[in-house]
Image (cartoon, rainbow, N blue to C red; front, top):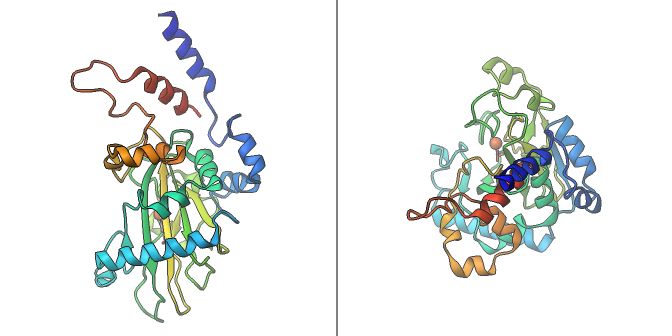
Length: 301
Ligand SMILES: O=C(O)CCC(=O)C(=O)O
Ligand SMILES: [Fe+2]
């Protein structure tokens, strides 16, 4: 009993306010020079992090997304609205692909996810898209103004539950179709009404090659329009707060002993290897006590 009371006291004492940086994360934010990004996420709801991804990894990532899209054939029926983005070729469930695993484990990406969705965050969606040039007067391609918290009841919690990064393999300017967001829109903590969406003033998230754009689940954002030749090849990677149900189910990776034996700490985290979920066996009565303790403590941070 006394043990349980002290656990409750410890969990209570760990609680962070929304947008607060934990003591254990602070040194990484310092070292990686991410305070401007933390501030921008708090104030505006989105930010661009630079110098995060080595350029050779970007070439590999671009090749993977194009190969996957080709393999799935989604480039052939993009006009019919393949995937979630109209007119955009898409591939999903990319965690487990070696280059994606290396990218999403990079320190700046990991630190920003932890800031936004707390310790113990899991992979929610890991998708690649290829956006083509729009023709003048042509149909809008991509996802119109929305927020990634859309499957949570509104008003959305102050603690962010979904955090998306968009990582363009070649960088993205406004003309190249940079993702756009509405500064300050995260404060509404709900989806935009139709009239608000029609009048919203979005701004482009211009990303130099090697950087990524990031927003939080309440921020209103939309795919930009590519007006110049070429394509925008992008990794969309969303992570979710540990208690929410990840959109993509990566339990096959958790069960893959060879994969897990070689997995970095970052990947173990993304698939929830240390969380209590799924740890009660049909013959047992309680979840793994170590995992329960870890999960409880992480949930507050
Ligand atoms: O295509 C884009 O630029 C934005 C896509 C999007 O809404 C997302 O990844 O959450
Ligand atoms: Fe989105």
